[in-house]
Amino acid sequence: MDGLRAGQLVVYAVADGMGGHEGGDVASYLAIKGLEEAVTNKERYLEKEYIETNSPRLYKEFFKESNEKILSAKEDTARLKEMGTTLTAAFIYDERVVIGHVGDSRAYLIKDNKMEQITRDHSLVNELLRSGELNNYEAENHPQKNVLTNALGISGDIQVDIYNYDFSDETVLLLCSDGLTSHLYDEEILTIIKRHNSIENAAKRLVKSSYEAGGFDNITVCLIAPKELSEIFRGEIK
Image 1 (cartoon, helix red, strand yellow):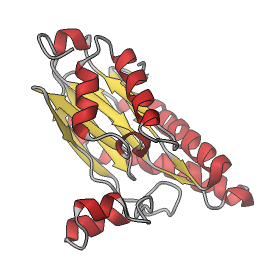
Image 2 (cartoon, rainbow, N blue to C red):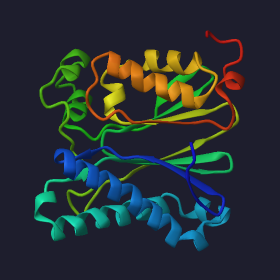
Image 3 (tube, helix red, strand yellow):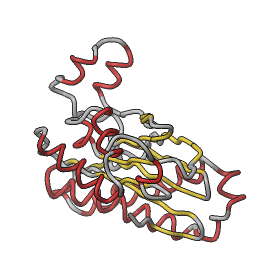
Image 4 (cartoon, rainbow, N blue to C red):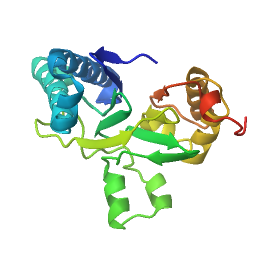
């Protein structure tokens, strides 16, 4: 899947909008558009030395500009006043990946046949889960499961989580909306990915499997790998 490019930096992103059908569509579009414009406007700074010495500030600026684009649109259009969106983005430079994150879309890192959730859900249920007020079963069935505690387009003060990882030839990165993870367990997601030779086919199968499991919400999947899955998971179950 192609990313936005500026110099040697490649950017992949997933945004899951909220605020009704129209509001959600507009918010998610503006989040991605704002991110693209922010990266392009700072292209002259995107050299390896600058990126390494200014992280995470640089990436938080990208998110801030994207957020401001949504807030500006809300002021201009009354019917969009409830819109907002998640935004999870991967900034890949050489063999490093920086993840920027707001909301409850997720980023996973797959390496050595293990899948690790990188991001922390900015949701009411996750906060209750972390505090011990809910167990895993209660969290999965909570009526306010989709209530976010942090999202773009809500206020000018957003919390952006930043994560920094190695991104080698044996690594797979998954960005997805909660439409995928609400209906498939992590083990099921990993098994599906390992059973496919290409990221395109694996991504399509993930979306289809989520719908078959009862998914009806927006299901967005972005798989990133430096080479074909068949080379990364040689000898694994097919």
